[in-house]
Image (cartoon, rainbow, N blue to C red; front, side, top):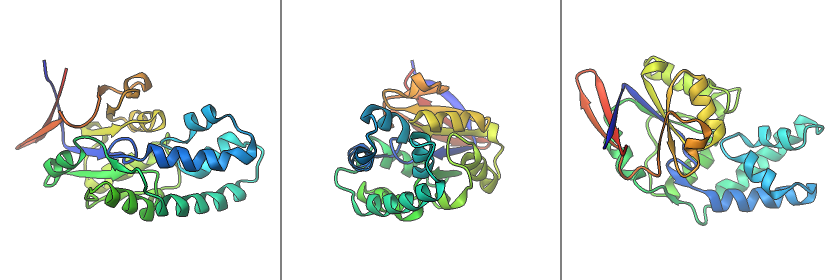
Length: 217
């Protein structure tokens, strides 16, 4: 049976939620990790959902963070120029179209050039409000990005529903006091409030006091 939850705003992660960038993320990060002798499994468990410099700090805790910041800038530039294999998560375009006239925002650990490149590659329109790496001082799993989006939309955190795929993103949404709709095969295991395999069967219906989000039970 379909389930329904009420909301007044939707906050959307990008990578893994709207855009499947797994191929390029894993290709570039494993290339970065190889000279450091890092376990590929550890790398892939760490990098999703976080800003790059934070991932580097977790994997190379003794390294000067100034080096992480510099290499993160280099990584962002490489990622922005490499969109081979970047595609839409099933149902993302239709879901964004359904949200067009409703309060919503994208909240991503990418910077503006990377967000723009990946959304364009996937054929998706960037929402009017985008909270990116430039907008915050703390990366997911810190809740700053989601709280910033809610504040700019003028919606209480409890009335927002976050759509996320990664463990760091799910933790950030929950820490912000929001309900989290996990997207993808692993989202439920990260503690999301609800979960769907993709966005194809998620729908919204507006009324006088927000809207309803329906999804498979």
